[in-house]
Image 1 (spheres, rainbow, N blue to C red):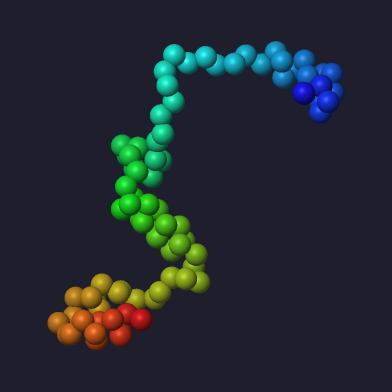
Image 2: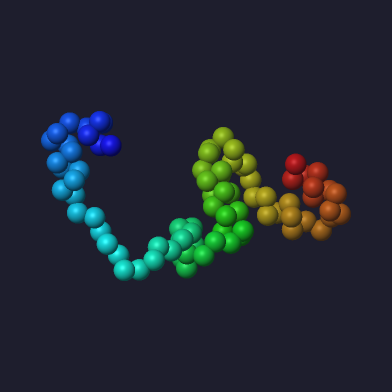
Length: 81
């Protein structure tokens, strides 16, 4: 198959590349947690971190203040939106 795509020099280089043989099975690892396990929470934080890196999407101000106000929930929802 590679003979139809690559030239002779590249074919020799490709075929002489040693392959790593591991005795262990592969494992799925979620790179966004320290322990490597996936969780909905870690996915949410990953999405939010990547979304908030876009400057024009960042909201100016301390939004925690709105949620800590002692007002009815419909008012906090209105202020937040």
